[in-house]
Amino acid sequence: MAYIDSRRFTDRVSAHEYLAQELMFPEHYGMNLDALHDCLTEFGGRIVVGHTAEAGACYEEFRQVFMDSARENSHFTFEEVEGEVKLCPECGNALQRGKVDLLDPGLQSAFLVFKFDGSKKSYDLELKPKGEAYYCDECMMVFTQFKEK
Image 1 (cartoon, one colour):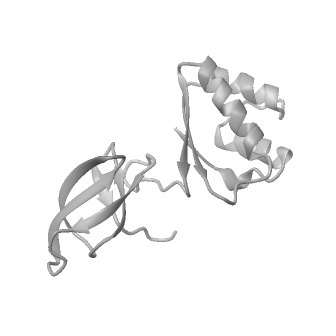
Image 2 (cartoon, rainbow, N blue to C red; image 1 turned 30 degrees about the vertical axis):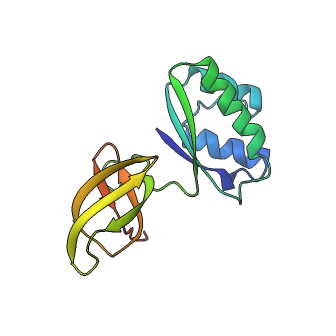
């Protein structure tokens, strides 16, 4: 799985250099949209793009190639998530964003209801009352704080 930042698509040359590095394309990668499509249709895996309002000027044309390639290659998936992609500190997968609601905010450790995509998962954790949290499907863990590296 590869995590891509849409803000890095400021111009075609730097976007191709960024993708070649992040996706580990071969040295003979042609640095154009046709070559990108060729690599992606041979690529088996998943690309998750953190998409923000500050997306680079040429992101949309690359986005179209990602979507077209995913339609042609059943072993390649493309997914966009709003905002910056946060990665699980345990396994490295992309985290899903949700909201935290504590049933009794006066408690230091309380029952947590984590809500995302219309479904709920429940945990017993030590948390701050109400706020943003992230859930990892792989580790089945909830994170509420991230330390800057």
